[in-house]
Length: 404
Ligand code: HEM
Picture 1 (cartoon, rainbow, N blue to C red):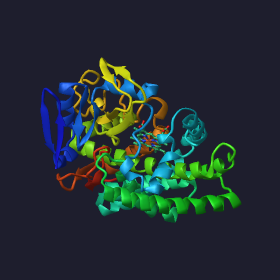
Picture 2: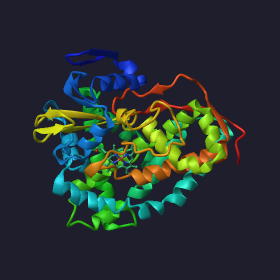
Picture 3: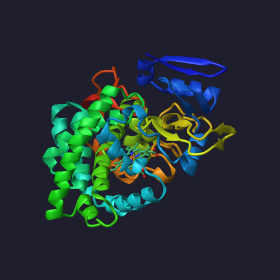
Picture 4: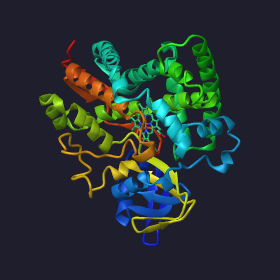
């Protein structure tokens, strides 16, 4: 299927598969026409924003806080619709602030720092087993067990359930992707029903026997959070707190495999671990797209937007805007400043950014210390067929000169 974007000046045709493999040429073509471009993609009309300045303006502007809800034709997906309506990602103003303030207590820098020893321990014990194998899949054998164990611990759900988290998170990511089909929505609706039942049981158990985890803490705030909001928040955290961080870690390993000189530079200066993660967030952002709907007529960067217009913010494109980043298509870990938009901006700025950064930095530091040298098993890189996320199917690497 072709992705077709049309303006008065130009028509851009691109095979959907080619876009999934490498979206950056399309972003550049769109930005070349206009950083905020009116057209349509996959039959969706709207404004496609590829400019950094324009994307940041829209993310910060209250008349654009509302995310695009599920289309009317999906009214029948009751579980999905109900859960989304109780997720902070889809809420605005007072309701949003109230829920965000409450859940944020579990994700403050001080709170997240407490997880550092656990994250480092999991990272090293995973590598203890993997380096003996000499060849492994970074996605399923390293990034996924690390992030799912961390989010399962934060929420306070049993460790043995984490394999189900992977299935849930992976399938549900597709339900919020631009490329979603009725089949994926149907499947996601069924899974949300399952998750709903699962968290209802978990919450019931914790009500009777509270522990020191986030769900137990939120139960104590019963007067500020409803049971439905608590279930929806737990579901949101499983999806948001998991899949994107798996992608950040895997994209980091891929970026360094493809840029050996940058890996050597990192080996010579480990203070570049944190800036490297920022550069991966910019260069291969796990979240490529987020969407909004205009709540009133508004002018943005000289364009008149009308109430009801749909806006697609291409974060992965904004992160490569040459107006802001020198040599935007190059992976350079020693950049002086990396103000990427990968965690969004404004009222909905990613709640888990501190945790995601900590996990990815710990993973990279451990890989640096233990792997020394690695290479890809194959240069055939397989990206999942998603438009809003940069997500590898798998990433097999071979390791050399590893350290115990
Ligand atoms: C590399 C990893 C991650 C990336 C790239 C990422 C990206 C994002 C982005 C772009 C948004 C804003 C969406 C919008 O404005 O439309 C967002 C929101 C959010 N993220 Fe993340 N995220 C990551 C990891 C996490 C983690 C680890 C958690 C929690 C454990 C988390 C929880 C959330 C939540 C709850 C929101 C909604 C905030 C709100 O609506 O106020 N994310 N994330």
